[in-house]
Picture (spheres, rainbow, N blue to C red):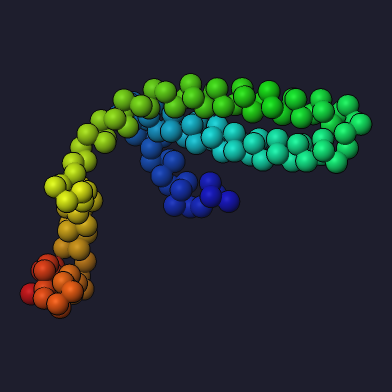
Length: 142
């Protein structure tokens, strides 16, 4: 259902049509990692279900063989997820470097982004302290 959302489809098409081949490659790696991770989580759930079936039907060898097959498949998908995600680590590390913590532990990047968003809004927005003193406001509220 998530994939068939029109907004998600627009993002997929825009990223796939990107002129920058590096961005397109990173997007495809992210997509592959997300699909593999979702498959891994689903297989983990099926593995737990197989564990219950083995307890309920201990005499059936086919259930035990199915459990082993699911465990192997889960291991293979987990390994493939790690392989697909490994090239993304430098990109993620570079993105994290851009986020700096201030002395009181707040994210500077998130705060500056929030200020930009507030300034773009055409309605009056005020940031008040606990004493109801105006700390920040956008241009519309002035």
